[in-house]
Image (tube, rainbow, N blue to C red; front, side, top):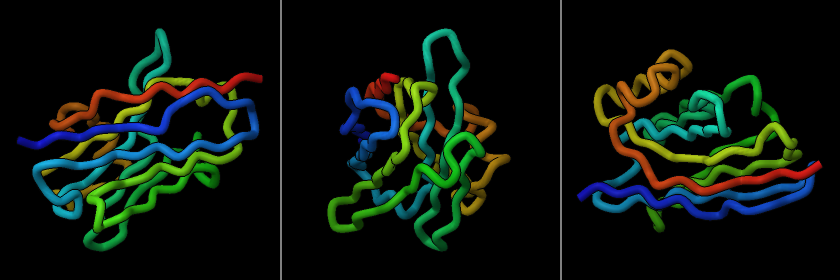
Length: 131
């Protein structure tokens, strides 16, 4: 059974940092296009970053580019989202998700399709940034 488990959320002041984890069970994340999404109350779910480990390709939304970075620990089958220079507008529930079909297609066009192509989701972890 495929399962994604996020952790690492919390409360932080503006300008601070957090590192989210997405531990993958049941398969190797390197075989999939992995995505990070977030959803703030009253807003649509936003795709913020993708990563395909086999060629290191990926995408960052303009809203997080230069502040957020995806990293990996193959031994732990875990992806991380390092979030620096956090802003109050980063407050949201954060999710990781996996796309199994054509995983090499892992860019902006893919993440915009959200749940249409990302079929496996974690339970989410809350990030709250105070001003």
